Amino acid sequence: MKTIFVNVKCELGKAYIVADESVQEIEQVSEVYSTSGQWDLMMKCYLDEDTDIGRFVTEKLQTLPGVKDTFTVIAYKAFSEDKSH
Image 1 (cartoon, rainbow, N blue to C red):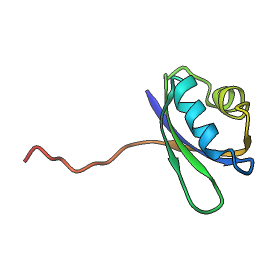
Image 2: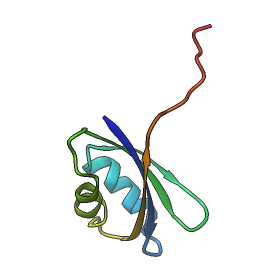
Image 3: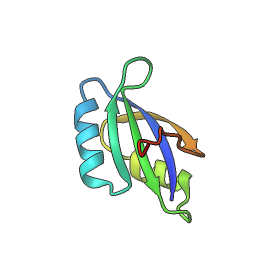
Image 4: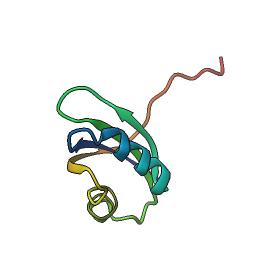
């Protein structure tokens, strides 16, 4: 599995609609956060190793109604605090 984060700029008034549709309709979208600043949303996506990231973003995310622009970040490693001790 590979993880990507996609920042999304939406048409005015469409951010919540885009967020709802992406988590309901696109299996690879794990979480969507509403954010401040240049981007309206940040989507966390889990892709199979053989998935073409460019095709996924351009064909699945950029074609959602209300999406104006995207910026993709590829994550290499997740770090977290070990809560077992």
